[in-house]
Image (cartoon, rainbow, N blue to C red; front, side):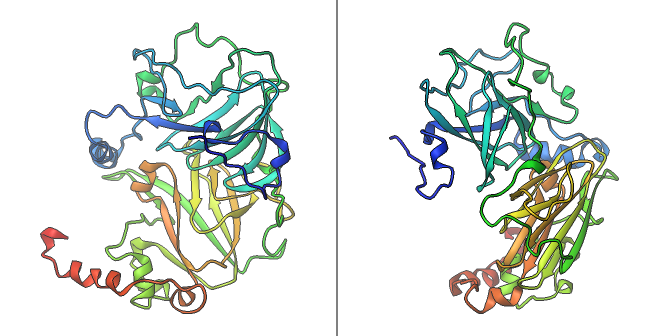
Length: 382
């Protein structure tokens, strides 16, 4: 079945001819796990005195297909295009750990959408895409008819730990990435085209929250924000707010690490980078935020990039959003290993508006009844 993703309201519809299931490109990492993922996680969190590195994937996949050193020469993923047509490729990073530098040999790529938000067209040769991020790029199939490499080398910390990542045979490929000037996307140059501008403009935020993350290996591997490792509560945050009336930060346990935000306020999150070498893709649920200060570029309140996953490495990144969507929203690192080790916080946005009013949450009584049923079970069954 042919799927057509065309949106008649897409402001960029005139820039491309084809947008269907065949133009979706997924990037993922693959672990050749002999033992279960939970075992590997346990080794990372507690093995070798707690100082283990993150588990390194054995190979990368494009549309679910990839090779690794010493493995079978499987047929590579292929995307067919027709000369003269323009294609909207939707590139998605679905990995557990890896970021990628994406490019297509001999072709420039015009970015038109970032994490579901339409941006002014920006043409580059290659771009970094971190876990959870999505880009739509337009490729003009205007080059001589032949095969061209789609490249997505993985960005990993200490990748030498895995010998499968040492490299492909020297004869393949032989060409270099990119074309023209070889321009790598600078995120701060992205500009949304619908309602550009950070909420409130350049006025100070109603609340500024500093977030500093660190890695601890004292007995076990932990990632903390403001010295707190996030741990999932026994009772979901939403139920505590709606059913038990939680409205103050003091009502949540320390390791739930929950900030209560008032409704319709402008919030600045100041995420201080870490010198540990990782790029941490931080994802905020419930909002697309404006990056008023990214890893590079000047402070921008006029038309900053707008998305829901931002990479944070060694610099301080400031993101802004307005609390107009009541709910308990997670902010977490999208590297699976770091999330499991506690790199997350929760924003309980407008608790009162979650219980009553036009944006209140509807929770069936049968769902609420599950909690006392669960709590009545013997400990062995909980």
